[in-house]
Image (cartoon, rainbow, N blue to C red; front, side, top):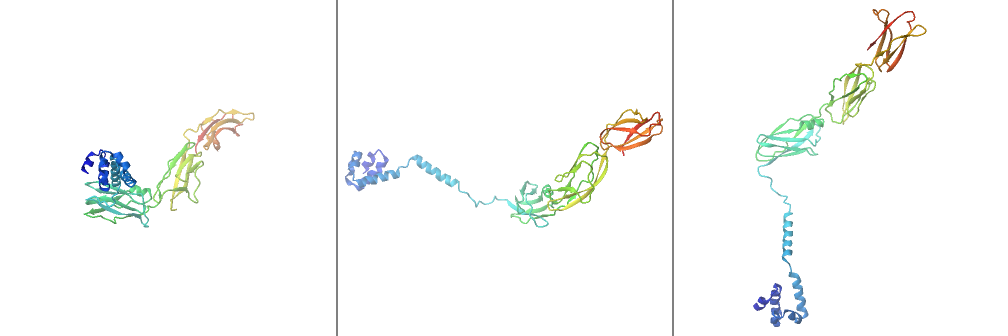
Length: 341
């Protein structure tokens, strides 16, 4: 049997030779004539040998592949019961309004002099969690986030962490009163484009703007944007106008404010007054180049000492022909125009 093992060139035959020696005592000559022996074996033994040969032929590459697959399987195991990092604890709580409604998407901060600031965003149920270490922590809620949602700022809370988690660090905030913060409007200038934005605070945005019921109308050509509170337009008539604006929020709270806008006359209305000419009936005629909406007063004088008004009008815009009905008895007349109320 040992001779058979030593003479075999194929490791498979080392195993098969031992097996044949046990099962087929006359197989000692197989070491020298392997192919002949296979032919002389009964069919039963040849089938057994073929089956065993196919079963144990694993190459080194196949073994390495199987090992790699096993390692990959191990690396994919997710350890879900990992212990928390030693020395860290959790401060947790809720952010709600004074009606016990959860407030989401607001930043909460934890500040400790010896550690970096930690932060978290409140969840849809208003909860938050801060991972901290031992020591005293100042917990605050972002005031700008709250104001943007129409809430008042929250008072900071101080928490001392000493070897365990701290829960129920809760904040409750109230809805800020809705109010219009624009109290005065800049002046407008006649025939020039005007734009001014009204502002409000408190309540719960978005806001909607309108004139209050019973308010006077806005000056001609001036409009109020319902979604942005923008007053805009080109005002054609000088003067002062009072009106009442109203703002409403997302839950139909409202606030009102009386405002006034002053429209100054155009700095250069483009006044052009042509020289008078006498008509066949003895009256004087001249042309005035007017600006839309501007008030004009036309006066005359005989000796440039006393001026007497003869006509008042609101400019229609463009040239206007004027005839002095009482000039037929005078040899000469001087004319001038005053602009304004």
